[in-house]
Length: 277
Image 1 (cartoon, rainbow, N blue to C red):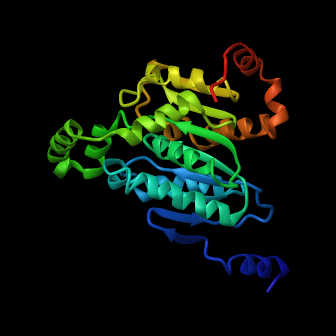
Image 2 (image 1 turned 120 degrees about the vertical axis):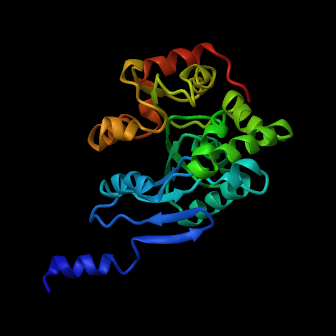
């Protein structure tokens, strides 16, 4: 056996995919020069494994280990025993790994990301970058549950969600949005969003983005409405090379906190808008 084959075999003594806890799998990169950061990928509601793994594989091939978090219906409908418990488990896992993390939230995975960022405040976990694709703070819950239920049960699921929302205690959702508005995470942010998104219209993000700009640089890549790219289809529309190229450029642009001060828009907003404490 050649030296390179022996090295590969040794690296693979750790399974490439490991089950960590409910809703979580760790995808280990097998490239030789791995990145220091771990990526926490929050998938959309009802994401099929083969599609979610395209994101994981794209990160893995670039040297990043990926903690894949499956956003379940339970997490959203019962957030106190679902999303918030999952968020704390993620923070505990990252705390034990003792390595910085990049968060990558897809669709309603953006809500779960915010719960993690809230829980992270009482830990030693360091978040270096935030990436949001088709971000929604569960405004698109109805459409997401319908998609997750599948065509056979879509009508029943839609009626069920409408009934549930009528009596729903959405304190957890409001807390996550309030967190963004009053004390957002101090790490550079990249939004990748389609202006044709009907589930999560861009106009619903504007007030959140303005709040985030007070504490960190915010980059935006917006796909024009005439391209008709629907919700959570940006990876497919752009292709892996362009999609991950955007992310790679973003990571390289902000390697540390000192690099934030090169962002003129961040400096302008940060220096003119009072920051809440």
